[in-house]
Image 1 (tube, rainbow, N blue to C red):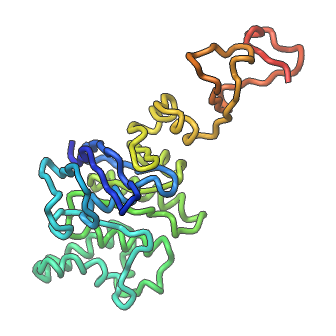
Image 2 (image 1 turned 30 degrees about the vertical axis):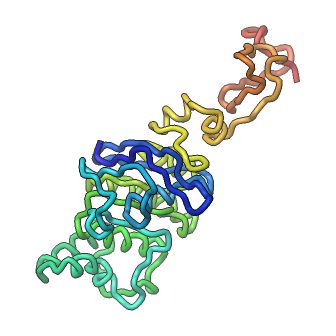
Image 3 (image 1 turned 135 degrees about the vertical axis):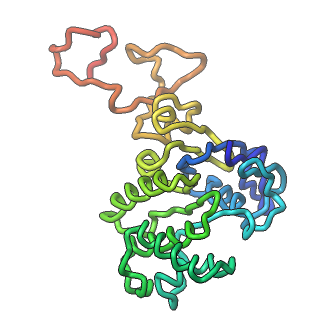
Length: 282
C-alpha cells in the first residue's frame, strides 16, 4: 500500500473525530472519502497532510512513517475547498509559489510552471489574476499549483463544492482524466455520492468517525457491508416488517428490508404470469 492509516484515533476535547481508522491505498489510485457532514472525512485528510496530528495510530506514505514529519516535508499537494489562491498574484506566480519556496532554479521554475499551466488547459492566461478567472479556471490553477512541486500524494478537500452545477460535471471528468494521466495517488473529500461514484477508483465511506466500508463504487453499491452503507448509497426504500410481504425471507431477527428501485418490477393487474408467488398487490 502506498498510503496507509493504521488504528488512528483523533479527539477534539470530548469529541471523537476518528475512531480506529485503518485503510490502505495503492499507488496511482484516485480515492474518494465519502460520508455525511461530521463523519470525519476532512479530519482524515488533514491528518494525512500533517495539518492535524492523531492522538494515536500510524500514518505511512510510500512505506515511511510520517507522524512526526512536518507538513511541508511530507511531499503532499493540497487543494483547498476555496482554492486559497493569492489574489494579488498572477496565474503564473500562483503556480510558481511552491517551487520558489523550494528555491528551485528560475529556468526550472519557468519550464515547470508553463508545463503545469498547459496541463490544466490554461495556456495564454499566465498573466491573469484570480478575479479575472471563472470558478472552474480558479480550481484548475489551484490544481496546477498543488502539482507543480511534484508531490507524492495529492489531497483535495471538496474540490467541486464551489463550482456552478453546469460546470461541475465537466470539471469532474477533467480531473479524473488528468489525475490518471499524471499517475499521482490522489484522495478527495466529498459528501456527494454521485460525485464519488463517477470520479473515484475506490471509495472510503466514513460515518461518526469510523470507516464503514472500502471498495470500488460497484462493490459498495452491490455488496454493502453495513445497514448504513446500504441506506447511504443509491436511493433505497426501507421497508419495515418486511417478513409479512410475499417473497421476503426471515433473516435472523431482521425486521427491515432495504429495496432499491431496480429490484422492483411493476405489472398491470392480472398480467403477471411469472413469479406470481413473489408478487404483492398494491
